[in-house]
Every structure is written in C-alpha cells, then in structure tokens.
Amino acid sequence: MADIILSEAEKIFIVHGIQDNFREDGRSCDDYRQMELETGLISNTSGSARLRLANTEILVGIKVELEEPKPEKPDTGRLEFFVDCSANATPEFEGRGGEDLATEIMNFLSHSYSSETVLDLKSLCLVPSKLCWVFYVDVLLLECGGNLFDAASIAVKAALFNTKIPNVSISQESEDTELNVSDDPYDVKRIDVSRTPCIITLSKIGHCHVVDASQKEEACCLARLMMAVTAEGNVTAMVKEGSGSLDPSSVSDMMQSGKKIGQELNYKLLEKLKEEEQKGLKRQTVGFLR
Amino acid sequence: MKSVLRGVRVWVVVAARNKRYGPREVARREDVQMQGQVTCEFKFAPFSCHVRRQPVQDSQEKDLSTQLLEAIRPAICLDKFPKLQVDVYVTVLENDGSALAAAITCASIAVASAGIDMYDLVIGSSAKILGERIFVDPTNSEENTCMDDDPARVGGQLTIGLLPSLNQVSELTFQGDIGFNVLSQAVQICQDTCHKLYPVVQQTLEKIVKDKHKNI
Image 1 (cartoon, rainbow over the protein chains, first blue to last red):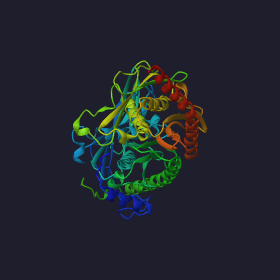
Image 2 (cartoon, chains in turn yellow, blue; image 1 turned 90 degrees about the vertical axis):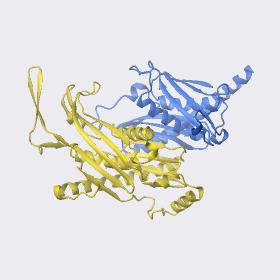
Image 3 (tube, rainbow over the protein chains, first blue to last red; image 1 turned 30 degrees about the vertical axis):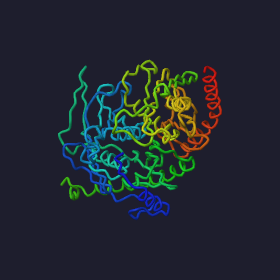
Image 4 (cartoon, rainbow over the protein chains, first blue to last red; image 1 turned 180 degrees about the horizontal axis):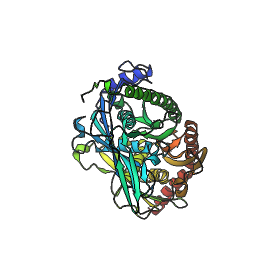
C-alpha cells in the first residue's frame, strides 16, 4: 500500500479519537467519505466510470471484445481485470513500484467476481466453444487517498452497470458462422449488475474497527479484513491483509459490520446509478473529463 | 530447517533458512530495516496437480505466497533479528486439496525447528462449503465440486490460519458465494479444527527437537 509515515504521537492521536468513535475528519467509525461518481465518460469504451472518494481518484474503462471461450468453460463469457497504479498517484509507483499493489487489487477483484452466481456469464456466450464476449476491465489509479480496494470495486460496479454490448445476430451457414452487428448504436443490451459485490475494507485500529480508512488511518492499522458483499448480504470473497493478527471475536464483529455496510452501500449505489441514468444526456459532468 | 507434512495425499516440503544459511543479511542495503523481514515463496511442483503447472511461478502461486506470508509473519518475533531476513520456501509435491492450510502449518513448524523465535505456532485449516454443508479439510475432488443440482450454486472455500495459544487469527481467505450465517459458522468450525490440531503439531515439534539433539 502507498504508505505515509506518521510519528508515534500522531498515531496515538488517531487511535484515541477512533476509540471515542470520532475520527480525524469528524466521521464516526461506520461512515464513508463523500463520493463523486460519474459514468459513461470515455467515448472509446463500452462502459466507463470515474470515482472520487475524498482524495482517491479511480477511472475504470471496460471494453468488450469477441473472442474464443476458455476450453474449460466453453459456454460462458469472461471478465479480465487489469489494474494500473500510475506514477501520477504517488512517486512510489514509478517504474515497477506499484506492481505489487496492482496485483493485489487485481487478484481480489477477480476473486470476488469468480463465482458463477455473481454475473450471468452464460448470456455472454454467442456460439459455444467458438465465440463469446470478453469484458476487459481496466482500472486506472490516478490518486491515492486511502481505501483503494473499496473505491476500485465501486467504480468497477458502476462501469459494469454502464457497459453496453452491441446486439449481434448469428446466421449459421453450413460450417461458417456469420455475425451481423446491428447498425443502430442504441440497439444494445446491458448486463445485470444486481448481484455484483462491493468490497468493504474494515481496518482494525486500536480496539475498534473503521470502514473507509484514510491514508493516515491506514498507517495506524496493522490488520484489515476485506470482504466482497452483495446486495442480499452474501459474501463472495474475504481476505485478511496486513502484518498483524486478529482476535476471533473481533473477526466476527468486523464481518457483522462489513455485511451491514456492504448491503447498504450496494443498495445506495444502485439507486444513484439508476438516478444518473434517468437524467440521460442532460446530466452535467463535474470531473476533469469534461 | 526442512519439514515435511504428509497428509493422506498432500505432500508439502518447507525449508526455512537455518543456521547453515542464516537468518541471512538483507541483500540490498536500502532494504535494511530495524525489524527482521520474512519472505515466502509458494510453488507447486510441475507434476503436483491434476494438470501440469508451469515451472515459473504463476499468479495463483504468487497470491498463495502473500497469503502464506501474512499467515506466518505475525507469529515470528521480528524484533529478535534486526537487519536480517528469513526466507520460507514451500514446494507442494502432491496436491490433493487444502494445500494452503497444509503449507501454513508446515511452514510454522519449519520456522520453529530452525530455531527462530516465535510467539506461537500457526495452524492452518480449510473448509469447503456447499450449500448449507461444510466439509473440513477438503480433498482435491471436493475442492472442485460444485452442486449442479442446486440452482443457486452457492458454495465456496475458506482457509484460516490461527495462533492457538494466543487465540489470534493471522490468516483468513474465502472465495465463493455464500450467505453470511454459513460463513460465520464455517469460520468457527475452522478455528475449532485448528485448536484440535494444535496438540498434535506440538508433539511433532517436540519430537523433531529431541531427534535433533540426539544426533549431536
């Protein structure tokens, strides 16, 4: 993680504040910072989203392409994640510096989408063992302000919601299959994102745990639990991260609040995405991609 | 020091550098820290799985290396060897399921028998969840099973690492899609398994130490 260095006194200040349910920016332990989310910004993609969570800035672009399915799963499409930690975010990421963090985010994202129940990948297959849609999900990290995993997962979900797949009709003539892509750019289908998870990171600081830790809080945290939670409260991936260890009772406490917050976040996110969608072309872009 | 854990059909070989090699000096000067450092390398032998693995480390093995590192690092007294590092190499010779859990247990025995100070042993345990049913220590075929008769196809796999006498969870990883209650139940069951395994692992370690001193 892109760590900042804090003195002991600063750490104690943060830890004591959290004990009293009062964090350095005035939030309580279960509060997220303000988010700014926009979708459909990049013209060359099939779906895109930009998320700003306080100082964390993430841009996700999804491109759909027609390819051959994997031989072990001939009748499903697939998702390919790629995360790039650019040196714009912090000088530490220069060269190969951001690679470890990028792989970590990438692995956890693909773990949380690995279950077949999350997305209907079967509907993305056009001709079994010949043609399917592949979603290339590229996550670009532009600025680090803590809580990168949660931010990345929210942006990915928003971009998937925004993704439009062209309708294709297939005509089978003897051996060859012929594809006809619709001429109408509005003749598209969407993928159902109601079961996709959001990642919730719970950082253990002192005797309490917080969600959406800022960079300073991350520096005080020895162990965190990350869970991918769906809207109905199912868990699709979970991992403990960090150099410390956790008490079994605090693990179950953290899982409880992770589930509660995850459900709420999923619900609110989908609501806001639908609201933005309804505004259509009238909506104003507020970010840097104007 | 080497330790080999042999389950019914799981072979894991772990080598932690002992006196003959170190804890060795950190290779690059800029990496020197006042706390000891631990590195882990997890590798499946090319012939260890059902399909052949590439000899170079793939992304799954890299992921497992980080998981293993996170599992055993909290148990090692890092302040006892400043400026030095301990390397843990895990090679799975035959994989019949629960490889990560076996590797965690095995690595902690190897580190302990290499004479490196530890707060506690780390015991790994894993469970496969299918619907409402929980299977402890799944075999390879159980790991790859999903319930075709269940429309929701709920299930997943959980691995935890526990420091039994301190009662601390050092590692927890889950993949799949299950309800919250079943997951909490599975976490509890895995912890209980670790506590059950602990005396056996302690005895083994005791035997290793006794054997070592017999030869001197």
